[in-house]
Every structure is written in C-alpha cells, then in structure tokens.
Image (tube, rainbow, N blue to C red):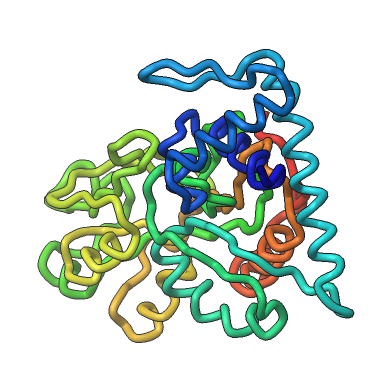
Length: 312
C-alpha cells in the first residue's frame, strides 16, 4: 500500500461523501479507492468511515485522522514545491471556476503574463455563473461577484466593480430614453433579466442620487443566467442592462451601448475568490489569487478589505 495514495484517497472520500465521486476526481477506479481506504483502516486498526448503500460518513476517529491527514498532505505539497528548483516556482494543477465575462474579457487575455511567471501551473478553468459545489467537484477556488451567502467559505475580496446602466441605441430609438429610473417600472421600457444562481430569479437594483433612492426591478421579455448572454441581449436591443464597467467600456467607446442615469449612483459589486475552509492554501493557489488581485487592480481595485477573511 502506498500510504500517500491511501491518505489522499481517504481525504477525498471524506470531502466528497462518496467513493464514486472521490474516484472521479482522483482519476482512479472506485475499486482502487475502496481498496486503498480499506488497507489504511487495516494498517491503523481503526474504522475511519461508516458505509451505507446511499452515503459515506466519517467516524469520530476518522474525523480526527482527517484533520491530521489534510495538514500532512498540505505540508508535503509545500515541501515538494520548495524543492522544485532554485527559484521554487509553484507547480501543479489548479481547478478554478470564474464568471464567463470575467474570463473572456479580463482573465484569459491576461494569462500569458501569468504563465510567463508560473509555467508549471496547469489551470482547469470552468467558465460559468452557476453555483459550484467545490467539494463534490474538487474545485480549488471560485471567483464570484456579489456578497457571498455561503457562510462556511473562506474568501478574499479581490475587486470592487463599479456598475452602470446601459442600453443599445436601437433600443432607445424604439422606446425612447428614460430620464428617471422609475420609468423602467411604469412604462413600455424593458430590462434584460439576470437570473442569479443563488435565487434563480432577477433581483432589484438599488440606485440613489442626491435627493432620493429607488429599487428598480423592471419587466423583461428575456432573462438569462450567463453574463455573456446577458450582454449579448442588451447589445441586441432587448432591454436595459446593469453592467460592471469592465464589461461596458469597449461598447461605450464604440457607441454600441449608451450610458443612462449618469447622475445616479449604484454601489460597487464586490468580487471574491472563495475556497473551502478545509482546503489548504497552497503556494499555487496563493499566487493565482495574488495574480487575480493584480490584474483586477487595473480595472476595479479593491477597497481596504483585501485580506483573507472568513465569511462567518
């Protein structure tokens, strides 16, 4: 039995709650993972997991052992990294998930600079606006806009995104230019709806000027759950958009989007990198997060809350 493989298999079964899911993320067969855990239990003479036909639960002894194992695996990862060469460059595979517009407009175009520094890091990047189960899917971190609702996560705030309200010239020519946000509620105007992953429905937008504040929800003919599709709908003239400025800048310059309500203020949208509390912040993950902060500083630098923080 390779004790390192056995400990790694045991840790993944605990995190995934399933031998099948653990095997998938480790690229092993279920039989191999099962045998490794059984051999580990035999060596330790302790039952680590309770198995039923539907679920796998860690025992009290297994929970204590798991805490020691993940620390040991993290120390091994750090030790290997420190001996990887004179420059101690981080190496290995990172699994991340980021919103589609942020990936296509900012992060992916900037990746050549990242790989110039860290050529031995392999990134598997999921591009979506969905809720990701980081344990089941073995994802190291996610980048998400808006306040985080999962209180169990650890997170670093990496940017504060300025927002604006926009419409395509074709939309304004057809419906007219609104002079007040409430017109979006009371007239023939339409918004493009964005279906937030945590609620599955559009949320109202808070806006204020020097004398009043409003909550604008609006009516829509189309609602989507993907940022790139949301932008495309607005460019097609299907409704009014609320966009981070990094998404609108190019289209404002080309005249494809027109800013609205410029004397009204919208709160910035926080952008976080989040990861499970029991996931070791390896050197490769840390340099990736630092790089995201550096890249976003050119677009929407974070305020004062930029340290690692628990969302509790």
